[in-house]
Length: 316
Ligand code: NAI
Image (cartoon, rainbow, N blue to C red; front, side, top):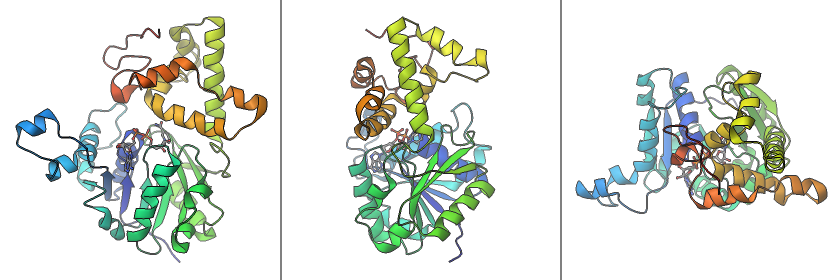
């Protein structure tokens, strides 16, 4: 079967989903960007007389993400007009529209059960032959494909973009045991020729390749910093501009990734390793506390740095 991506859907409009939608729009591919329906109306919505039944409220999460694309740095869009190619929506009202796309990219919270429950809904509406991929940072692709229809399983694989998706060239393609060879072949060629990425095919092992190494490196750095009393500024300097990285490979990166997402990714590999190696993947207590406090990085305006004035936060 020859595949062609004329229209795509991105499910999950957070840090990565909005960036992936922008990357597709930059290429000229129309994108449906879906997120969940908010559980509450905001004060501003209430003042306008809006309720949870109104589309404006129901599409709020995806719409807000699209608006943010204009303000982000580095710019996710090559031109403002590319926004016209991204249509916001929500998973309750627009689920059936997934039958109209050639590629569905799942970019929701890093949790196997939540992802599986979404796939069940998607499986019921997608048309046969639609490619579906997950942007998971490291959850087993085989585990996610389990229980799905034969056609879904043949067309399902991991497509792991890196943050920010417009700029970072790496794309890990992770086949499931059930993925059809022609789907792997198509996605590899599409990733390189259309998305402009350098594709690496990774095996379905916990956190694949880049995040296995990346999570390990970050956690070892944090442990060394705590044991030896280095400051956030010192660590960011020596893993940042001074050695030719635009920002830093440590704290600023964690703020950009999102501490909540990083904790899910670290836990995924922690749960699946044994012995001495397992200890390395245990996230430090102070990061657990930061997540509990809502200090999850740039997306909440507060992480290791404050978004606005880049002030370093006290950790205890
Ligand atoms: P995020 O927290 O910024 O966004 C997640 C989005 O998913 C939110 O808009 C949320 O409302 C939505 N969502 C949650 N549950 C949902 C559901 N049941 N149905 C539909 N939407 C739902 O997360 P982020 O960082 O964009 O991560 C998304 C995925 O991409 C995760 O699997 C993560 O591991 C992966 N990833 C993250 C990277 C990063 O640097 N943040 C890099 C590469 C992969």
